[in-house]
Amino acid sequence: MRSTSIFRKTVLLNPCLGLLFAAVVLLALAPRALHADTITYDVTLTPNPGSAYGGVGVLTLDAAPSATGLSVYTATTGLEGLSFTIDHQTFTLAGDTSALVEFLNGSIYDITFAEQIGNSPYRFDLQTSGVYAFYYNNELSESSGTFSASVAPNASPVPEPSSLALFGTGVLGVAGAARRKFLA
Image 1 (cartoon, one colour):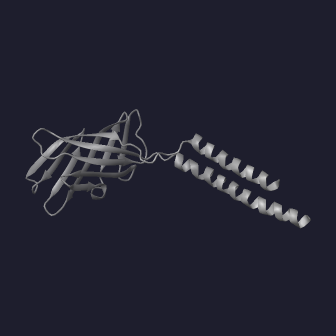
Image 2: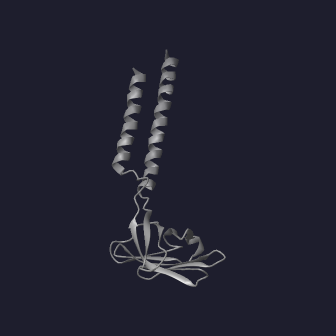
Image 3: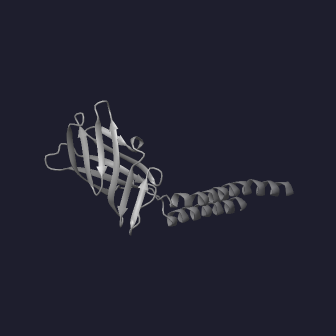
């Protein structure tokens, strides 16, 4: 009789410990996910009248810019990704490690970026206060315009703390109900 009781407690205790361990791991990893502040912007390059090429871009930062003052991001401090597509040519941060992005009072203010790709130089420059120049045709022609950025829609939202807490209490509730059922 005693060996049956010990066996029952051991069998019932192990699943409960497993669920408790899973809940602890979930709660330990949750703060890391909750503080994922990476923010992505869609950049639009609008050509001036008479200019041939506009384009699109993506800018990724490791943290949101401050709502007040100047926020500066470089390839070594906070600028996670930067790419532009103009005339089917893609320009990336890998080509310019001196890239600089500045936000003033939470709005994009400046992107300084330059890259040359291909044998026939396609050179792309974004410089001060929202203007760009795209050189093509062996740098004999130029297309210019302005750029703007807007926060990209988040494709995979980060769970909020209350959702994780609700999930955790649900897991613990199921574990408690299972334990009571097996003990009865």
